[in-house]
Structures are given as C-alpha cells and as structure tokens.
Length: 415
Image 1 (cartoon, one colour):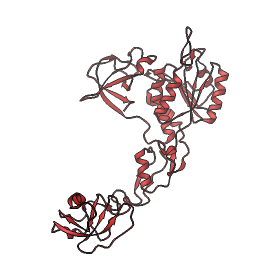
Image 2: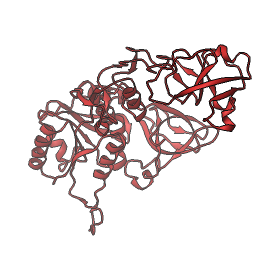
Image 3: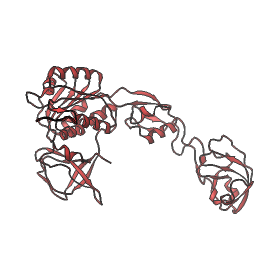
Image 4: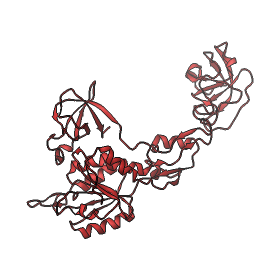
C-alpha cells in the first residue's frame, strides 16, 4: 500500500479513486418481464425511438371526429355513422355532413381533421346512442388532435447513456418501441466488519463492548443508493483472517467496504493487511470527520474502501468517496450529488484547517435553513444525533466559525 500522499483536498483523493474505476460490463435485458432487473439500472448506450410517438394521428378527447368545414355553421346536426374506440383499426370514409364517435387515443379517420368534445354536443345530455348529433360550436382544423410523431420522431433519442432507468423513463422507452435495453446493473458489493469490541445488537454488553451498527449503516447507505449489499461478513481482528476474506471477496465482488482498523495502531488489522496491496493507498484527507482514508484496487480484482470505524466518519466517507465510485462503476453520467445553499439557523464552530462535513437537519420556509444534528466538537462518534440527520453542511477549510444567517453549501440526503 502506498502512503506517499500528503494531506490533500477531498477532490484529489476522490479523483484518484475515480481514475481506478472500471465500468461494469453492460447487459442486454428484455423490456417485457424485465422490470425488476431494469428499474434502477443505468443505460449503457443512447436509445432512439423505433417508431414515431404517437404512432398515428389520434384523438385527445372523447367526442366526435368531424370534417371541420361541416361545423362552420354551428349549431349544426351531423349524421353519426359509427364509433372508433381506442385500439380500433377502422378508418371510415366521411362524406359531407357525417361524423363518427371517437374515444381518447383512438386513431383519427383519414377524412376527419378535428374533434368536437362531447361536452360541446347534444350527446353530453342525450348520450351516445342517437343517429345524429347536434354540434354546438365550430372547430378549427387540428382541434383536439394529437399528431403522429409530435412527441418523438422515429430515430430521435429518447434516453441517453448514463441515465438511470426510472419508472417514467422505462415507460417512455417501451412506448418508443424498445424491446431490450443495454444496461449496467448495480455492482456486487460486500461489507466487511472488523472490531473485537463489536457485538451483535441486543447482546448483553460488558465493559468496553459496544453494539455493532456499521453493517446496518453501510448496507443501508448502499440500499439508499440503489445497491443491495451482496454479502455482509464479520471478521475477527486477525490479519490472516482479514487477508483471507479480502482475497475471497475481492475475486467475487466489484467492491468491498470495511469500517475500522485503518489507523496506525497495533490492532488496526485492515491497514496492516492492505500494506501489501500496491493498488491501495492510505491518505489523510483534510476533512472532518473522516480524515484517515485507505482505498484503491485489490490485486484480487475488487475495489476496496477501508473507512474509519466511527459511524459518522464512515457515513461521511461513504458519501464523499464510495458513492461516487459505485455510481461511476454503473456508468452514471453524474456521479456526485448536487449541492444546495442553505441559511445557518444557528452558529457553530468550524474545523478551521479542514473541510467540515457536519450532519444537519433542515427547516423549511421561505428559505432553506439548516442546523447541526450533532455537536460540532464531537461529530465522528455522535451516532445518536446523526440518526436525525437529513444532509451535510460543507464548511470549507479556513473558516473558523459559522454564524447564524451565514449561507452554507449543503448536501441534501432526504427529499
């Protein structure tokens, strides 16, 4: 493991990790029956419409398809020669003074050039069954018509590489004729937890022992990023055991997340094992919390992110470094979460020489306001207060204090 890097900016460490990311191989998945695999996946290529949208001129309303010239002298009575429901292929010939009942989405007869809404006819009162209908208002050509291709022309892009498949985007692609889609699905991620002091939640604790919560935290952060943790492993603080787990997981997963054991101490087994990995680098990044970072690519194949053990430090590290790399693996066009501006509702002490990443809660009103969810002097281990956090305030290095009313940059985690 390389340790030559000096304390640096967040972007330096993140860019180094992103440069090591290899996008996952794309898969071709059928649209019919493929929702479970497609929803949340990321397009690997641009996708174009195979046919125009709409496929044909069709009615935007329930009413009567007419020749607009026949309505010019309205009120006027027209002969009803039939009905065109949605899905019908009938294309009736209309003579002067004739019309057809038509439903929303049904194809417009070739001889018609407008639709009269049912509420503008006598059928609104008498119903559909009469052989003639009274048209109360004149209509212009094109009235309440949806023109063939007005949404998308055949061959026009519908979605682009790097875009995530949401419900709306999947629906649009299916409507545009896509039968299968080239996508990158979520990476396979393992969570590796070390720490002799950690016991399963609910276990009786002795002095020096604490509940193990980081597996829940990491699996949850992955799930909130659209990724299910494939494997969660608890490992004893033994270098041989940790090395064996990294070799197995590294050859069967795309990424491994671990928490704890990255410091310089004699019991920091993760750092000791990763010392032998030339593609992994230790860094002390100028952020608080989360200064000690250890990440890179294992010889076994997977990327490894060895994060600090304190829960808030681990969560901050996930947001700033892990999540962007996992999104890059999946081919997202945007790997970073967008930031917003908020007004500090209260003041707090900043980290001066380091970027402060402090969990905050939001207050909503005319302006977005934020306040710390934890004490600014003890961010990394304040897991109780962190439970209420809705985002992070990013206070640049060089600022000693945030005052009430100051504008701060925030990452918003909860919609």
